[in-house]
Amino acid sequence: MRAGLRTARGGQETRFSRKPAKAADVPARIRVMADWYAKLAVPGKEHTILPGAGHRSMYEQPERFARGLMRCASR
Image (tube, rainbow, N blue to C red; front, side, top):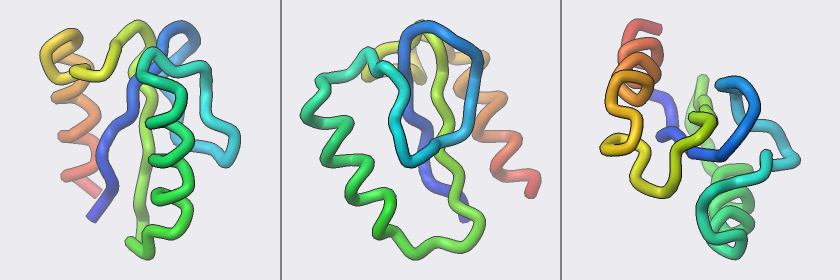
């Protein structure tokens, strides 16, 4: 099982790192999420950034969002 997707503006689609990318979401939410995500004990978790998408990436970039979900589901 992999964790959900995170969105950000600019750059390429990337996996989550300890230092979050510049996010399109509210910065306080990103910090809380990053702390929670670091503590989440899920084998093979993955955190993906969708450049140019905001908080509702599944509606703003549905094709990219679906590709990310399919990639996670296929592993």
